[in-house]
Image 1 (cartoon, chains in turn yellow, purple):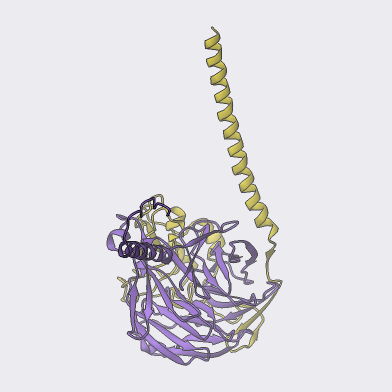
Image 2 (tube, rainbow over the protein chains, first blue to last red):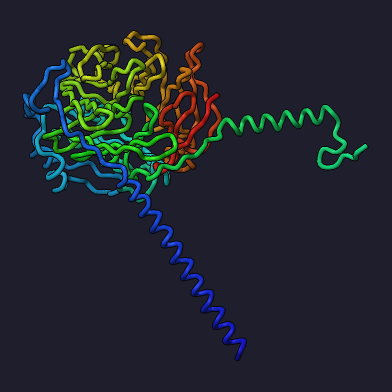
Amino acid sequence: MNERRNIGIRINASACATVLIGMSAGSVLMWAGFGQSMVRSRIALSSPKTTAAITANGARVAGFFDGVKPDPRFTVRSLEAHQHPPSACQQRTRRLSWIDRLMGVRVVYAQCMGGGSCTGNYWYSAQYTCQRNLPAGCTGATLYTSEYGGGSYYNGFCSCCMYCPKPTNCGTIYPICNNGAT
Amino acid sequence: MRARHGAFAGASGPWMAALLLVAAQTIAVGAQAAWERVPLSPPPNGGEPIGRWSGGAYLAIEEHSSAAPMLLVYNQSGELFQRVTVEIPGAGQILILNDWFARRADGYLAVVGAASGVGFLDIISPSAKSQTVVRLFPYGAEAVTFGPDGTIWTAGIENHDDPGTRQDYLILRRFDITGKQVGGAVPRSEFPVRSAPTAASVLVSSKDRVGWFSPFGQRYMEFTAGGKELAAYALSVPLVDIRGFALCDDNRAWLGISGSAEESQGLKEPHTVLASLDRAQGTWTKGEPQAYVHIHGCSGTTLIGGSYLDELKLLATR
């Protein structure tokens, strides 16, 4: 009887200890996370209050986009209509989402996503390797040759590390800018 | 006379010397790849492009494709000491990728990217209270660094760079700290029309020169602070195999390379081989494979890299 009770006490004690250890571990983790966010918030977020926009010649312009005309080759409608190539991760084609349309692409100006990143007549989708279990493996874009018109442009950003559940060859650089030319 | 004990008891002089030599070599080899780990506190968010070491700090980017990407600036101890948002009035989306940002030792930041499709160079003051945004159109930059004289170097191509276009221009451009272009180098015509010499390229600098590594151009070039070409070296490495590039203050250039096709296909654990430039031969000398690390840059003669987004790794190269 005493032995049973002892076992019961021992079980209860070990269960309590487990719970306590778990709670304290959880607390440690919680406080660690809290501490990290405290550190982050303690570093003030700076946002430049004054902005001067100039051209490369040093000429001041009223606004960054002043004088830049939209390129008729790129329209929001064409972007919206275009199906992105299937991602190795998602295995489905992708259109610009409503949030992309809302937040990302409002007006398409004279060029898309930087000079070398996509000049419009060609788009390219390339897979690259996402390093296994290595968050730092998101290395951006890769192109070797273009299947589309011979130009080796690259653009966009990698989806690999953000969306890919599997670590291998899962990234697809999907173009934001194109005029639907495939 | 005291008796000798232990593993070396009875060992003769030459054997002892040989053992000591082997031990010393082992220690030396081990020391060669002995990266010191420095945790980043707090770490940047996952799923973002790799950061870089520049101007005595580690720079990481968050929300790299958004209306307001944020630069995180860490010191060599891994402590976050500055957070700066990159905002361009009127821009719905700003894209900033790897090596598209740099820091000067006095705290100036230079960021290149595309704001709603228009190429820009953003020069942010050390206090981050003011910025000058340079509209680069029709040029768009895909790499940036500060030269030894404090000027800003960019690598990019122009929007009219469609196949068939014969208009020439300079790929590398120099800007003063006010944003005015003061020079340039490397005509576009040096590369085939249908090529992307600036895509994924990296600009680096040391005490007396600027280097430009162009994976698609298959070369590494160096320039004086004033823009005069010093040298060009052939370099052909598939882009997926590149694990970062660095130029140290002793002018040793380092390239991180992944190992094999098996690795690229995910069939093998990733690792990194460090290759250093042999200037006399114009070739790249590969070291031994080691655990995966991506090279972020160089501080003096210490390589800075990282295996995960939440840490830095430091390796003394001499």
